[in-house]
Image (cartoon, rainbow over all chains, first blue to last red; front, side, top):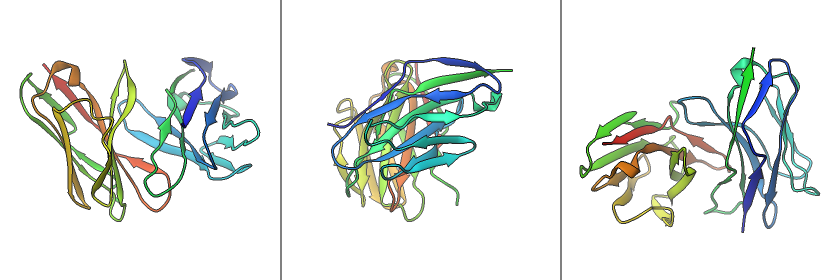
Length: 113
Length: 112
């Protein structure tokens, strides 16, 4: 079956630090991959996506590259801000008319001034 | 675009009462998903619809939970009777032609 594994959290960083959040997946075929972000008290928002191998998704300074050879989709940001404090979810969709997202457990990021 | 709309945003009720949560998906989206989020269990998919037809309800915890989608612009999730362990944030999400889902702001349910 499909599964998404995220690194254990929480993660605490100082402002302007480099961020890496690991995500690996198991899926048949060629899934689409996503990162969602959930700010306190809000719903999940799509942060970025990649639909095929070697695609790089990017948004708000965050990047993730679809690596089929390592089945990974790690999230990176060169310089985090306090406003990036949130929960981050990695997810995959295997594709098809009735497909659904499979989410990782999420990881909480706290950025201190 | 108004995004996915959920109501109410907060609901406090007593054990045994019926609770109805409402969702209006993004216009033109043909798939709708109901999720539940708690600290203990994280994010769980309860049920999803495609073109108003329920596709997978295996995540619905028990018979007290039911969901309907009478038309493309409206869905309900009902809990009858409600119990304290149903307290959670319930999210609705919709999906259009591509694979990404768009989430509503959620309904925070507290059952006393």
